[in-house]
Structure formats: C-alpha cells, structure tokens
Length: 347
Image 1: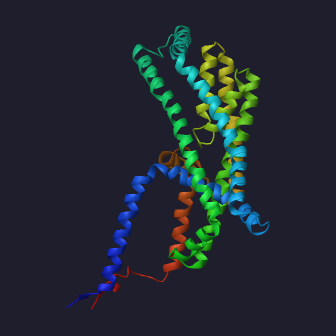
Image 2: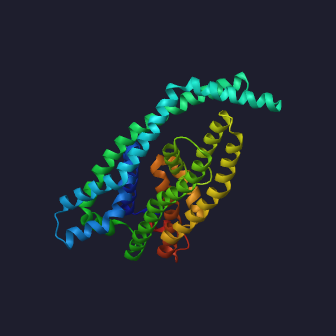
Image 3: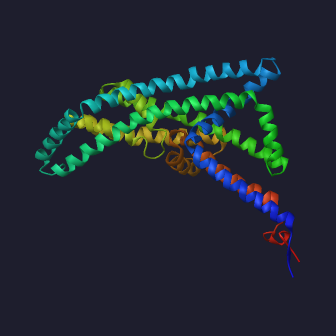
C-alpha cells in the first residue's frame, strides 16, 4: 500500500500557497508592472556606474543613486517629455479643429473622385472616420497622464534598487533555484538584451527620423520638427511604424493639391527610409546583443500589447529570455528523462 510522504505534501502545499499569493499580488499590482520594467531597464544601464561610484570613489549610496536619477532625467526623460509635449500640442489642435480637418480632407477627396470618376468616400465612411478620430485622439492624451504616474513610480523603485543593489543581487543569486553558472548566464544575457533594446531601438529611431526628415524637407512639408519627432516615435514599431508617419503626411499633401509630392514622399519613405531602417536596426542590435530580427519584431508586437510603450524594450527581452531558459533547463536537467513524481509518493 502506498504511503504519502508528509514532507513532500507540506512542500507541495507551500508551493501552492506561494503560487496563489504570487498570482494575487500580480493581479493587484499589475498596473505598476510598466514602472517595474522601466526601473529594471535603467538599473541594468546604471549598475556599473553605481558600483564604481560607491565602491571605488566611496560615494554614499543615496548620493550616487540621486545623481544617476537626475542624469537619467536630463539625458533621457526630459527630451522624451519635450517630444511628447510637441505631439500633445498637435493632437490638442487636431481635436479642437477636427471638423475643419475632416472637411478639408473631404473636399480634397471629392476633387480626386471628380477627376478620376471614382467613389472613395461616402457619407457612411465619413461618419466612421469622424468617430474614429474622436475616440482615438483623446486616448493619446489620457496615455500621457498615465505615463507621468508610471515615471514617478519607476523612479521610486529604481532609487531603492540602486541603493540596495549589492544585497538585492546577493539575495537573487542565493535564492534563485539554479546553478550559479546559469544565474550568471542569465545576468549576462539580460544585460546584453537590455542594452541592445534600450540603446539600439532609440538610436535606430533617430537615424530613421533623420533620413525621413531629409525627404520631408525636400518635399516642403510644414512643421518639420513635429513630423521628425512623430517619425522617430512611430518608427520604433517594426514593419508598420514608418507608415504611421508618412501616410498622414501624404494624405495632407493630397488634400493641399500636391499630388506629385505626396507620391514622392510615399516612394521615398517606403524604399529609402524603410531600407535604411532595416539595415541599421538589425545590424546595430545584432552587434549590441546578437538579437535575431524575428525576436525583435515579434517581441515588440507582444510587448506593446502587454506593457504599452515600455514593451518596445521588454517584449524582445521576454522572448529572448524564454529561449534562454530552455537552454538552461537542458543544462540543469538534461539527464532527467521523466518527471520525478516518484519523489512525492513512496512505495
């Protein structure tokens, strides 16, 4: 007759309790997940500098962490905030003058319909378009308010991570149920992946925005500063991001009767800017972290859906870590042929 090992029963019961509490805490705190992921990203980027200032230059941890937070704000978040402010101002203008914008587009499309004897826009499509604009644009402004809250929470988490970096890392190394070599492997790979995405993606966006800016300038597109910022932000989304910037420009040029310029912008961005993006994005990220292009593409798609804007960085990291964990599992349990259920029940 089989007898159940009480020690294993207690252990399994404890695992169930831990999983239950972990799920409960995750559901209650999931709104702070983007802030946590942002803090982890900045921590990886700042870790070596923090260690040097504290352990080599003998700075106090609180002072070193504060200086790093201020530098990150000035170098990273302040420019991003200015970019968002520019876009928000334009979005507010479009919301305030949405009827005028729609009427202008309708008149331009009507001209093309009469010229080529085709029907592009009817009353039903116009209503759908108006409703889409009315629903979509305010959501951008709401996202800006949520981003401010996320940034505040991110800095709060990041400060305590930096101040307690050594104890935190020692605790993780001790309690993660893996070999020390595999824990070190995860740390190295995570560092490479964060740098590849957190540095590579913005640099690629700046390059793509600069190349696109040359075409906008040659075509005489107004508000070059706004469209440069908008192109930089949207181009962070692989495959479709660039189209989110040059298609509206082309529509506006069509509305103004500049059909030739509109076609040239489409061709220039689709061929020249798109090619520059693909070459530079994949070459840079491969050099920084040897990330496969498909990992980046699918990671960004998943990351944006789950985490929002910070998913641009952490989406590819999650997929790459999943692949890494498969390698580690093989390393840890490569000789295990079956699930060790016999350890739970003794004969």
